[in-house]
Amino acid sequence: MASLPGDPITAVLEVRDLVKRYGANVALAGVDLEVQPGELVGLLGPNGAGKSTLVKVACGLVRPTSGAATICGAPAGSETARAAVGYLAELFRFPPWLKAAEVIELHQRLSGSSGGAGETHDLLELVGLGRVKDRRVDAMSKGMQQRLGIAQALVGSPQLLMLDEPTSALDPAGRASVRDILEEVRSRGISVLLNSHLLSEVELVCDRVVILSRGEVIAQGSPHELSSERGVEIDTGSGVRKWADATRADIPRLVAALVADGVEVFGVRSVKPTLEDFYIEAVKEEAG
Amino acid sequence: MSTALVIARHTFTECLRRRILLIVPLVTAAFLALYALGAHYAFQSAEGTVGLRAGLVDAVALAGSTLVGLSMFVTLFLGASLGIFLTFSSVRGDAEQGLLQQLVVRPVARSGLLAGRFLGASALCGSYALLLYLACVVITGVIGGWWPTPFLPPGLALVAAVIVMIALSLLGSVFLPALPNGIVMFMVFGAGLLGGLLAQLGDVIGSPSLRTTGRVTSWVLPFEALYQDGLNSLTSSATGLTRVVVRLGPLGGAQEGGAWLLPWAALYVAITGAVALAAFSRKDL
Image (cartoon, rainbow over all chains, first blue to last red; front, side, top):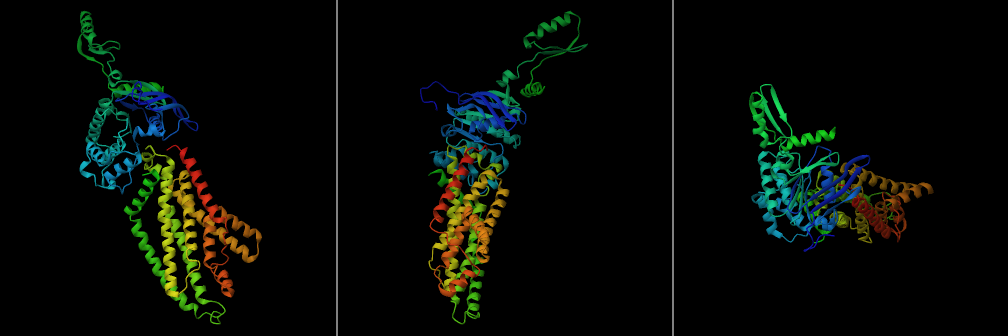
């Protein structure tokens, strides 16, 4: 059942021990995940990790083999849950003969949105398509269609927006514009689950990152936590020496100790991996 | 507006924007022109045919019913083809193209999406079949002075037959990608017609087994039984030798469906829809 006003805050998306098998192939092998209200969570993982399947289960497009997924307390796939969700698939198309505004209007009618022309205008302006509302989909660039897809997903003011690779086909400018849109969406209090391969994008925009591999969550935390300091490297006359557990605060002491021992020091750096470094390391470890 | 009506309207808009509602009438007009020319020559020639001159057979009734009967076959084929093309990719085909997922995520019942497709296609193709039948009847009447009695039931039988094909095509679209489903539907259409021909052949050569095989096929694919019933009602008012000649002519042996045909066709469409919905509801997209 969906949460009611006055109830304790419920996770917008809650996934518990979720398993999905396609025959002998295990797409999800017991995933636990939460997205809190207003949170922007990045879902990372190699191809075949189960990211899209997880998003599809949450949207009600795919039925889980076991486990549970709820949207605002309602079982994923139920009408209540779907009313709270906006979704943009990785491989999507809109009818090429529809105009931009008509795509939004079609989804307004299907979602029972009472936003009317005001909502259409607002959403198209949000994604920068206000001036081309009468342009047909088949006359739009891929980037414009992608932004139209995000606008469509926001019809009916969903509480959770799930985007599956929304920037995969975009140039850097297009990706930046999607980033701006996501910031605006977050400022409206809408939670976002962003499935992406572009780690730099995720690092820039997400509050939290979940890494999936082989259908399991192998790491999660804020981008800052995942890319926190991983030791100190000092370039000495006898080569680069590493202190894996040291932090930036330890550098003066380490340098002083080396100099006192007569070691020549040519350079010092605090090792701070990017999210991409962490991701590659985590996925490599998981792959064995 | 209910989901079904939203999707039905969407289907209509698609036909409009994709110029289907422009191209189909143009091609149909060409067909009707050809039909009118054929009717003109057919009525002209019928008067001079040996045997007809003796007054034993009503030449106008023979030519008129034969022409309208042939036009009914074309109407069935065109109506069913239009219905197949409008629905053959409704589920799996649209899902593979990424058109469906966005719609299904909305808080609407999947049954509404399926019902909307069915309603939209049935309204368009049913109207088309009826109008085409009426146009052929009017052309025949104006040129040759022959009007079918009863006037409307053959056309309504065609409408029902087209709706049966649409239901089958929607069912197929749940399980098959667009192209295989389209191919299968045309093969099903052909199989139904073959069943009808087998039954007629069985009648002519006196083979009960062949007749039974054909009739069972016609009822398993009731669009064929409906078509035959329509043909049968077209010639039901003919009498005497004219009736015998008409029955042995190009329309020969069209079977009367009987009182259970329409209820069976309605039940068939309902069962087909229920199976399609059950499968669609459980389908991972």
